[in-house]
Image (cartoon, rainbow, N blue to C red):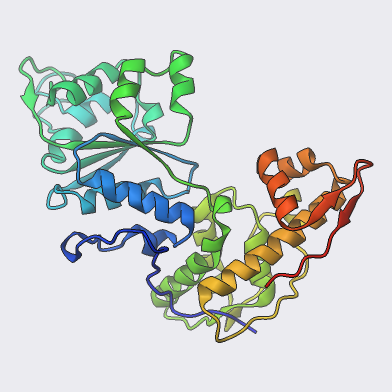
Length: 363
């Protein structure tokens, strides 16, 4: 039986402060990313820093939603009336990036037949989002440092600095401090960018958001394709919940869009174009859950997640003959996490490598 409903705007647990209606983002983080504890904490951080003019460094894996965080900070900030300019530094040639960011004067180089305003001036009174900041060449980094320190820029071929009023948010999918230590990124620039840091959790760190996001993408794709796919089968739900999602939300979105295109009524397992990684193949047993149609979505998801996690741990630990370190590597989690989960779900691994399941009733 397929399970889906039009996605509702989720709320976080009690204690999360709501913003005045005049400051609410058109697409709040909790609506675009989910209502799990990690996302509620992330949204709270974004709300707090939005009211400041701090430079923000957003880190996280590819596809996790760093751009959504940057846009939310801008839309909640006093600069929301100004432009939001996103620049993927990795997509610009190293020989052109200085001109693209800072602009150039007429005649400053071959082909510069007119004055050109750079992205920093385009983002005046607003926010400039520098995605994949690790791609910024070392030769350009001092100019960015000057911008952050003095709020002024000097165009290529120019002699007079110009004042600019903007906020900078940078994003990285690599540990920036490691690049500093290896000499590939300036330490002083790192500290200027890191006035406030936000880490975006991976999708596998917040599995309770998977079904909400899947249903949201089904609804959006139905509207785009003028289709009426009604939801996900039990098998498809199980497959989505136990897959490790190395491509994060971006991968989930692509999988769901393709599935909606292929499905006629409900999305089945065969519609999900998911790579059969060894961990996913080993970790996805046939689903056997009972659903209460009247239960709230959040309660149902939490129950299913608990059952899926327990089944996955049992299956993978059997595959690894009770070796928790090897199981942790297969599931892309650290040893402390799997040790905690084994205790939570009542799974005991004997010293001889055989795991003995201790029955635990989920209430």
